Length: 185
Image 1 (cartoon, one colour):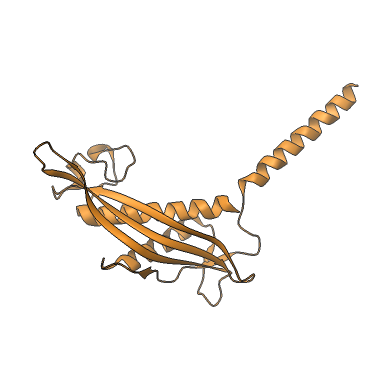
Image 2: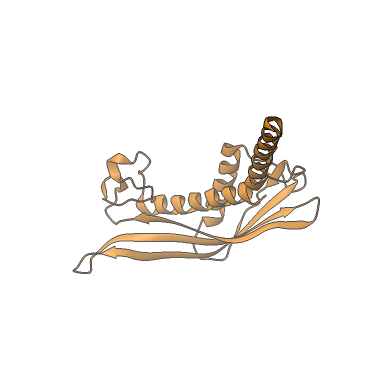
C-alpha cells in the first residue's frame, strides 16, 4: 500500500509540475528571430516612429528573447502602427493651475509567423508618462514613470520633461509587448 501511495504521489507531482510548466507558455520552437521594421505613425507627433521602433529593438536585444534580423531572414515580424498620441492635463490645483500632464501613446501591434503565414498576436497597446512644466523632472514632485518613486528617490528621472514622458510611454508599450509574447505561447 505504501508503494502505491508513493507511486501515486510521485505521479501526481510529476503531472502537476508538467501541467504548471505547460501553462507558462513559450515562443513557438521554430521562431528564433524577429524583424521589427519602422512602425507606421498615423499621428502628427514628429519622431514617434523612430522612437518606438528603436525602443522595441533595444528591448528585444536587451532581453535576448529573439535575435533581431532583417525582414527577409526573420522567422517572425513585429509590425506596429501608432494610432493615437494624447497630451492631456492630469492634475491641477484648486486655482486651476496645471501641475501635471500625461503623455499617452496608443498603437496597434501585429506579430506574424513567416513560416506558417499566420498572425500570432494582434493587440492594441497604450503607454504613458507624466510630466510637469517645471523644466526639471528630477525635482518636480511627480512620479513621472509610475514606478512609485519620486524625484531624488528615482534615479532614472532626468531630462526634458515631455521627451522623458514620451520615452517612458514607449518603454511601457515595449515591455507589455515582450510580456505578451512570452506569456501568450
